[in-house]
Length: 454
Image (cartoon, rainbow, N blue to C red; front, side, top):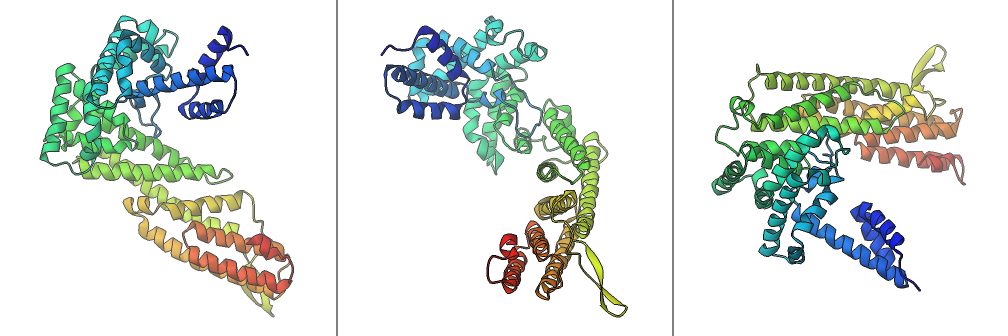
């Protein structure tokens, strides 16, 4: 059987080059089980691509996060993903004899990686059109090329600092703090703004953006003071974090519970993120309440506290709408409130209640930060009693044969149990479900509505 044609190899090379790393691994597994000469060539192409990506990952390790957006959306230095393979090809072509040394572990591989980074910086400056074509993100191209070349110049210093990143984020001792400051001094010797650029590279390695504050406060004896930090080149990190808080405050204020169950997840994440950022700002910086930063932080706290209180009140009302009560006659003119067992168990009203209760159960941490935890706890206790009582009354009506639609009644009981789950009252929810199962069994010995509700 003949092997792959030139056209086949070109098409496969383009496809393999665009495949994500996880897909490349799957393709390699599939190709390993295929017979024939073409499969053998395909396996060789996949192996070559895997090896090149491993080498590229080692060489550009300090910069790799800069070729993808931050998951939290905080502004950061970034380069188009399409630049990375072009950069690697240009850098590898300048030092082809050194590439096999990257396959070994140890200081030699690190030294080679640093040298190839310098070769890549030269390639960016010598042949920018090859690395970053004019048609690729033209609005960011000139600044991006300068940032990329400078980052490659400093890659060896950033690589030196990465192993200590976790230490600097915790409780570094005097020697470890001195190591950080020496690193930043060495960076300033390479570029005038080298310290800031390396901090940008370290910032991209942090999944939690606010943790950069812990490194900033270790960078200088005076960096905990707002007056020093706001006047330095490092002020941009704090401003970006505050901008991220402001963005989320606006997004939280625009939230309206309804038919989209995923929207509440975003609100919960935003509240948690804002609480973490504002809490870290309080711990790491001494903010002047009359300064721009101080006012922004104070306004964000007031807004989030008010919004959280509004959500708690809305959740209380939403439960009444989703599980309504009606007055029933007891004897003569005597009436009492009882569950309206003909109420729907689906729809926007029910979804709004579930979304708000999910938020109530998930924001214990943010509620403590914004001074609403006592109100949240009081609401949870009240709802636990109300939902449990609602389920008990509904089950009594089912057992007494007074429910107009036992199937819908048991579904409403299950809805009450799910609401209890959402506010983290799971033991009470289990009790409700056990009673519902018994109520269903009392109606018939075969398949019952309660089996579907449970």
